[in-house]
Length: 381
Image 1 (cartoon, helix red, strand yellow):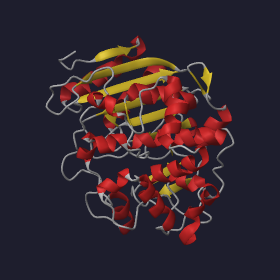
Image 2 (cartoon, one colour):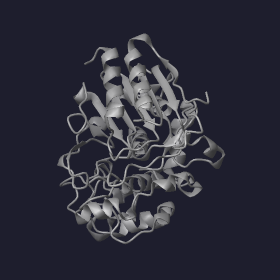
Image 3 (cartoon, one colour):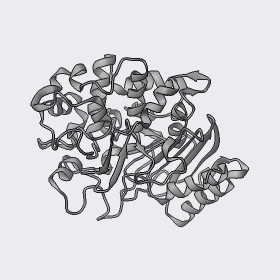
Image 4 (cartoon, rainbow, N blue to C red):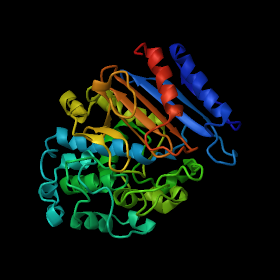
């Protein structure tokens, strides 16, 4: 539809979800967006609407995809959890077991679990980087391997906004002999037919929505900062316009560069929500899925400057986002507002992606309001 009207479906008991989604577009809170929810692996809500560009000339279509920033981290985490479930990766092992160069500068005892939970002390680079350096895998991983931690590893979390994807990704590459984006595509996305990409082929560029940056003064990295925050958020700084370039889209930036939509995010995480099975195929054991729930660290985050609770690659319930089944739930969101919530008890996934960005790193009321309406439909709040 060229008029940007809401398309898709919501089962009757989720009618308030559709009403909320339509209201976000009507109010201008959203320009273009998509929302999807699954229950027991089956899709119960799949909505999209609005416009894929700021000028509102291009409708948001069923197959529109968008850069979801840090929601990409959940795909990176799932890929690592898959390798761990196969016995190829041990989260309690030192990173240097897989990546010997990483032991430099006092990092011999940093565990893979520290990378997964933002507690390795490597939330940013100490050497000044240009934005183009993010496309140079060898350079950025070599610098991280050589550098000393910014704080004692394992003592606190400090959100690894960009570095986490390279750190976990390099461990995966050393184990699998291929890039994280390739492992994710071959082992997860393609078997599920899921339209999510860590490294987007040029053939898909015409489907990508244009991200609309947050208002001035609300962007990531604005305001007074500690040294750790400045290195983590402003070296290099976030340039939303870069997401419109072939260089960004094609690069593998596994903490922030993923391109997909709510449907693909919700579909992929049915693996975790349903005990390792998706579309009739077993990807992981149930124990391997529940591994993600194991608390690694909690307390004030040195970068986000708020309370955090991290498991293996995900935020856990009881932290920043109120969840109905906190002991059985995982979540994370992306800069601007994208969000995924996985509830292993209710066997649900909820995902939201959009192009009008808010100045938030872990979801805002657009996504949370739709999540609450979904929970009401499920009868779990």
